[in-house]
Image: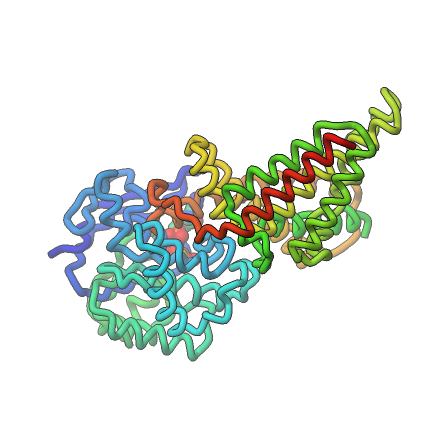
Length: 234
Length: 248
Ligand SMILES: Nc1ncnc2c1ncn2[C@@H]1O[C@H](COP(=O)(O)OP(=O)(O)OP(=O)(O)O)[C@@H](O)[C@H]1O
Ligand SMILES: [Mg+2]
């Protein structure tokens, strides 16, 4: 099954800034795709399009072979885990515990079920000590850990992570790598860390500073200095 | 630096409001009272506070407010922190009344509002916000109002948090003495930035909410186990105050 079918996507922000253009890509089940590119080349924009959170101005996109229309929202939300680049946008509940409970409760779990579910994950990321704290009083890395736990707890079929390892210490980073290696679903992420990509992915999308696809390939692409320089990563 | 006092004031104000609604997880006996009964009880107390100008009645209520704070084991500093400079603020608004009617009127009015708000603070300090929302739903308050309230709750934090961050960011990059004219212009820019940021961050957060399965139909009205004795005690206490208020 094709998880993402995108053809000729173009997205323009309300202030007329171009977000991404001419973007076509198919992503199949259990592929592990990484978006690489310089700052502002459209990675975050693309990921929001892939999650069905924004709609392209032109071109077409199908997620799980379904159109991005209201009727399919619930299906998308149940099956897509999305991590925002900025945890301050992602975390909006009064306490960390509420934060973790948010999605399960929205999806209709009972409070007991939800609490059991979150306990396991909180333990994994070492955040159970933070339960009572308001998220905005956490350190940058702690916020990221809480946000990650929120996304990963439901084991979604499609995992979309916008720079999951920025701001994070070595131990947590290794945990993320360990988790992602075991994860069986489809994964799309953006990052600026090339060695991290080598450990977890098998497909690389190189974006150019003009907000277009520069080159598509396997991880051998990461050895191609010429392309990396053209993408302004090196 | 000339403009520091104003900014410092703004900064502490934004920090104060940022956490205004945040639950502090108090283990209070009031938690044993069913929220549905609690809400009505506290509303009665609020009504009693604002429907009189008699100083005797108001002091009687004040006495009961203190009693309630002690009995419900709310840390006094927490209550004081929440009340903050509110009475002063109300009095400032009432200042014209000192000349239009009388000082006594302005003072009593401030006193009334202070009491009413205090009861609301005690209620919100001891009751999780989620349960307050559920209670409103239980009383068939239209969903749109309940939702508005719940958004206000999270956006209050958002707005003041943003203001605080802008102020701190500015401070960290400031190099000193500028003309008043510059300061004035900068202040205008600050305000503009602030509104744009709040608006756009609100949108981003809305996207995050959606990505995390936001579904307003999902809330279930569920309450904790009903304990008869604490509820009866609470009802009795409210009744006693009401009777006392009428007699005095
Ligand atoms: N809310 C917005 N309003 C207007 N323009 C925006 C907005 N968000 C992003 N852009 C613009 O869209 C383009 C793509 O931004 P995007 O956030 O997708 O980049 P990115 O590849 O994720 O960058 P980074 O590596 O810095 O995260 C940039 O030129 C940016 O300035
Ligand atoms: Mg980005």
